[in-house]
Length: 69
Image (cartoon, rainbow, N blue to C red; front, side):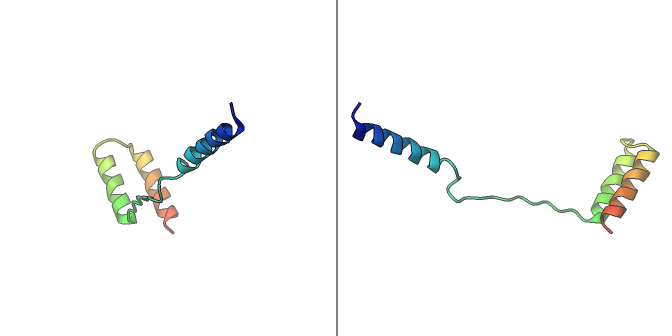
């Protein structure tokens, strides 16, 4: 194989590799935030639905309150 052809193939592979490293500058960040009130309401719903026992409910509630202080 001729050196010029080898160089062309190598440059082509590098170009494809580099072009695949990004997403064309299109970046999407999805950030979801909840308030302490919403988290506590969700926790209350889970407890009322029987998904948590009383001990778990109290531990999770205390953890939420400590985290937000």
